[in-house]
Length: 397
Ligand SMILES: [Zn+2]
Image (cartoon, rainbow, N blue to C red; front, side):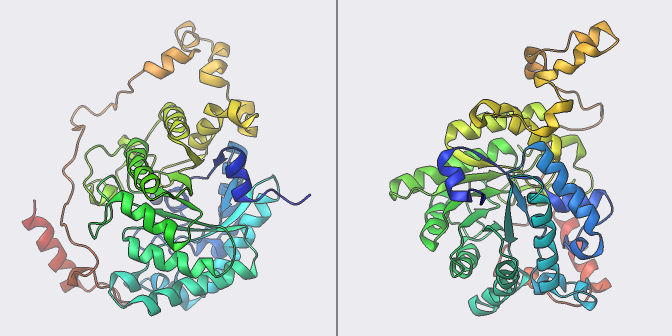
């Protein structure tokens, strides 16, 4: 029996996405922070496969190929030179194969993903930017992925260019942006972004990364208003962070002083994800997944919250009772007393950090595509360049 396609699944119910690969694999020692590129698909295929398996077991319906930032220009940026030993195309193909292998261990689909590029950020233009997307698309077509995800765009213009390229394949296309309720970084509102994504041809529209689940849903709510007003009805998709970001500005968690190496105190609990899944579902979002910080247990929480709607619990629930029921087996009576929904729904977790503020001051440089400071180059960052940015950073403190 052929597997049911993504659009049919969205029409008939809810689709659960996966979690954040670059963050999870960086912590496990397979990805370099800074470039955040996915050469691990070639260098450490077993590590990538294992993470796919964890998400599959947690209830993910989609194995998103580990191709984040796998455009040729990003693989060679600021002295990273990943392409000295690998080509962009080989990474995209290898990642698609790994996702397919694990997807076929269950009933999951495979998505090829592409995202924002240094070429666009440097202002080199449409033709050069689309060339980057085309290389990735060629790999996805050769590997016959089930659908495509254009994600993590800060500027709707670049997202439109990516969707345009992907539409040529005839496969379903999702378009998501890493924006919050304030809209894209060129000042386009969230509602207008959604309309432009849909008009460019995206069958599924929404947000990913940069903001926490609640702020991301606020943004989707604005997107929905825009789409309704324009009479457009794409499926809605959310893949937020698993970090709390109430203090973020327009640029999202990138601007937090703790990004990326000290975000742990902000991590969402599995119970936060129950709320996220329910709120997303009630808003009409039918593709519900996660991005950076999302681990398998967060995805399992989504699957458990929506178990009734989906008609099944995930395999990972074999080791996890609903709302802490397994604690009935604990030796200590005061822990057994926590085996109930009310306890976990109402507990406000302490951070254990007596000198930690609850909010931070975002960097707030307020520059974006079109600004000289954001032009990229393949060579490594020089010590003069580094001093220059450190000087600006301290002048803004
Ligand atoms: Zn992310």
